[in-house]
Amino acid sequence: MMPGGMNPKKMKQMMNKLGMSMEPIEGVTRVTIEARDGTYIFDEAEVVGMTMQGVTTYQLTGTPRLEPARIADSEPVEVEISEDDVQLVAMQANVSEEAARAALKETNGDIAEAIVKIGMQ
Image (cartoon, rainbow, N blue to C red; front, side):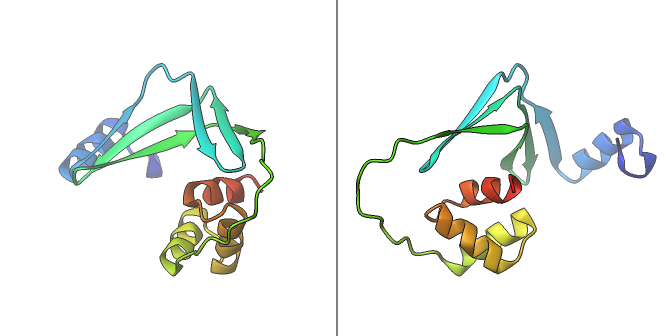
């Protein structure tokens, strides 16, 4: 649904004027994200590429399931987490910096995994 009942054709014209374009990736049957704690699998996912000022960002919509990784016996390594990473996760997941920091620690500093983990809670 378009904001304020806006006509989809007018919305596309506005986006073109701003140098934005959105293109769905057709025929996507599965998306996987490899993470330290396992593999997030999105079956029947929808993926849209949005290009703005020469940078393409991909939006993924779907419900993930986690296939846990097999953990080898090893010494845990403390990962250094930057404040920029904390702020990015907090902004993207719409949570406090404390919650973002905790998610980053749980995911060993993996930004994408931390955002997905927060979204699954």
